[in-house]
Image 1: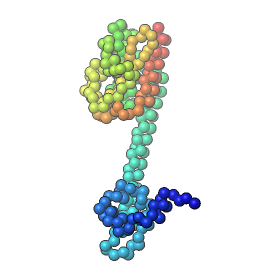
Image 2: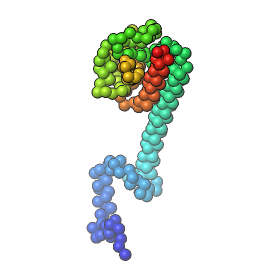
Image 3: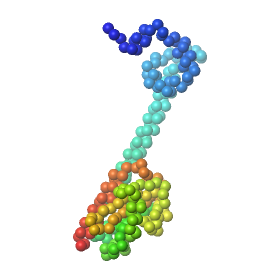
Image 4: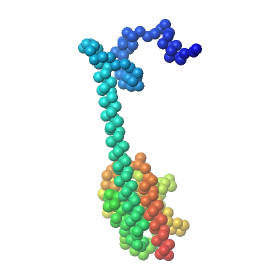
Length: 239
């Protein structure tokens, strides 16, 4: 019957002497730190071995305490992230309900520019269109921002539909008088249909890391699509 390579090595006449193992470990005190899986395979000594013998049980206990502390830290981090995500999701859902309950085009714009900053806990929001043509009656009065041709492609380069930027000042052409309060931004492209001007939905946070390139964009994309389709609906009803 053939044995495993480990068995063959163990039966070899060149078995490593315990003294050699002990000497190696003394020269490499971080060995068990680098190979923590070996701790589970070790048999700890009894406590009463004299002052010259290191208490392996104490060593293993300290190792387990460290691993437990790291696990608790990871758990708290994950829990905090989950609670934060749930909070953002609830605020986005409330925003959507408000948008869908708009009574008119003007009311919709008022919700976007006036109510969403408070609901989403932001410094500013902006609804922009890129056009040289007259806006629908009342649109500019309730806060629609007109951008020069090419401005949206400058803000959303390479044909991107959404961009998040941390530690960046607010663009005055987008946020107007609130630009000075903005420290991070989210920009989303809006498409209102063939023959309609290009649109932009912009969010500005007061915190430098309120928006970050590493964040997920699913909820923001969902909110932008609701705004886009709601505006389309009111434009059709008003035509």
